[in-house]
Length: 247
Ligand SMILES: NC(=O)c1ccc[n+]([C@@H]2O[C@H](COP(=O)([O-])OP(=O)(O)OC[C@H]3O[C@@H](n4cnc5c(N)ncnc54)[C@H](OP(=O)(O)O)[C@@H]3O)[C@@H](O)[C@H]2O)c1
Image 1 (cartoon, rainbow, N blue to C red):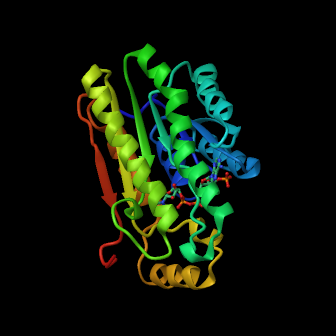
Image 2 (cartoon, rainbow, N blue to C red):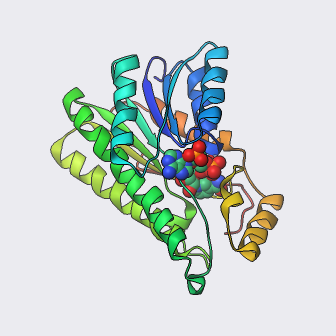
């Protein structure tokens, strides 16, 4: 059960990460928040505490290996353990490949892939020591289907899927008791599409989302479900989106 579990969340300042932090905080988890925007993190932490929950936060960048370690260390220092980590931080500056937005490609790869790897690297040794743990990541439907304008973002989310599936298999081989779940959201209300530099692609995303999108709390409920599952149950993957989203 979630009560008293220590859950670390990256990308906790906004959207899916924020909704998950608030939901888990209400459910009695001790939540450790990471992202770059201090004011937003503070607001989320205060809201959790205002609801009677427990929270700590660290201003951190998932592209920095040491920051990932510091976030896990904060959880250990404040709450004595880490039960679950939700590696959720991500960006989606989508464009056509022919636009050659190479700096955006780097950003996507650094945040969406390396950020997840560094989060795993910061957590696995603790989980091995504890003899149990749980790693949850936010991939995307773009990690299981391909879309024009989404080449590098999609590749980053396919990479997350591959890393998590191999991690699951290696953990199982070792009988490490580390649960792994990859979540594939479709259109979810958040700030994600604000950073799209190609205006046609951004307008397309806005048009879809004006017709069909889910509140971020629906993904938070999925994370809650995954954490609440019995320790001997591993929910490998979970895809979630609006009922009538055709892609
Ligand atoms: N919304 C959707 O439709 C959708 C669909 C599929 C998958 N996803 C995935 O869901 C995840 C969450 O996105 P969202 O939709 O909730 O968007 P969002 O509202 O833009 O949230 C993104 C979060 O990631 C954090 N972040 C970005 N770069 C970071 C970095 N370098 N270091 C630390 N934190 C960083 C942001 O915080 P700071 O800016 O404060 O650092 C923010 O908290 C992402 O991985 C995204 O790819 C979203």
